[in-house]
Each structure stands twice: as C-alpha cells, then as structure tokens.
Image 1 (cartoon, rainbow, N blue to C red):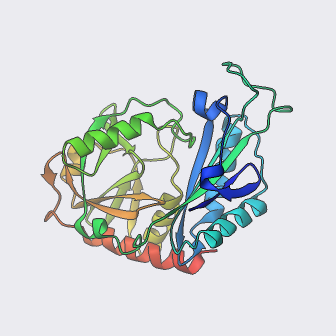
Image 2 (tube, rainbow, N blue to C red):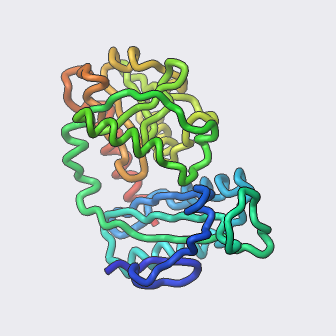
Length: 286
C-alpha cells in the first residue's frame, strides 16, 4: 500500500481524505505538477517548483509549502514507496471553507489543500512505446484560454485521449485556428532536416518543463530550433515528429491522421534527443 502526503501528514493511501467541499473537487480550482523519478532521484525538480509557484500566482492562490520543504516531501515519498522509476503527482487547491460558492473563500481563514502521491512506473527510461513511436489524430482545441496555467481542468484532454484510443491511436494533437497548439498532455514538435519546429510560448500552450530542457539540449547538439506555429498538413510532410512531457520524456511520433511520417518508424532526431535528455537528466537529478 502506498504512503501519500495530505496537508502536512504522511499516511496510508486508504486513510487519506479531502473535504467534499474542496474547491478542487467542486470547481477544478487547483493546480498540479508531475515530477519524474529515475534511479530514485527527482528529474528537473527546480523547474517544476518554479512553474508551480507561477501557476499559483496566476490564480491568486497561496502556496502552502516552501520549496525546500516540498523537496523533502518528494524525497520522503520516493523513499517510503521505494520508487526507482516513476512519478510524483502534486496537487494544490484553494481548499474548503465548508460550503460551495463561486466567490473565492477568504485566504486568511481557508487553508489550501496539498496532496502528493507516487506512481511506480518501471521501465520508463526503456519504454517500448518510444521504440515503436506514437500514432496520433488531430482534434479541435476547445479548452479555456489560459493553458499556460497548469490547472486540474483536464476533462477535454482526457476526452481527446479517448478519441485517439477509439481511433486505434495513441494520442491527439489539438488544433486551433488551423494550427497545432499541443498534445493532450505534451508539447508537439516536427522536424525538417536538422531543424526542430515547435509552437512559440504564449497563453495557448503549457510552458513545458521538459520542453525547456529538450530545446536547450538540441541547441547544444547544434540542432536548429524554430519556435512558430505549424499546421497538421505541414506536420504530415515533415521528416519526423515527436512530443515531450515529464512522464514520457521524448516520444517519437510516426503517424498523424493516418499519414506515416518518413519511413513510419521513430526518427533519428527524436531518438537522439530522447537519449541525450535521459542521460543528462540522470546526471542532474536530485
């Protein structure tokens, strides 16, 4: 049985409770982060902590835990649950004032809710899915406009995953005004020659922590990076494509809306970036 963390306490998962009046449950009024674990150490913890603070600030939500204390909670959960490869999920909501109201409760009298739990995922680094590549479909992006805030409003991305599954594919890329925004739980990229193309940062996409690291490593490896919008049609004509996320690292894409990319197998650039990313993140893990 897993040990989880709820509002300052470590406890067995079957004893963990949150109020039925919690605004995360009633209003999706909360934010989250997912940090990967490789070799029992945390991948890019600082990046996730910085983005967490930004998300909270954008929603005028108080951060209930200092960064150094949050790091220790992460480490203790890794130790208690004996995680070698896996994930730590963190969620902070505006809490509960004992009732339901659209107006925010008084932050001076209502404590935020903080929850963390682990997911054991052996084989993350040596993923069979990465070796075969992902097949994706395109869907209309109908989410709210502040996708740069990592909120728990994940219903439509979940629906997108299910649309892909129903179509016999692995994931979906969302399209707005004719251009790809991002995947359901990842940032999207195409490759033309030695050039990596990915959407520029803005409120339309999540500012991925893995995205930052991968683009830095790509530039260090003398690859050209262009941050701009691209269409599904341009993607289908690309040499290769891939996605990045904290849980899947760099995932090659081999098919988009039924059109195979290149030779229909994971591309050279994507696989090289995956290799470099995992190697460098292992070295820098805490």
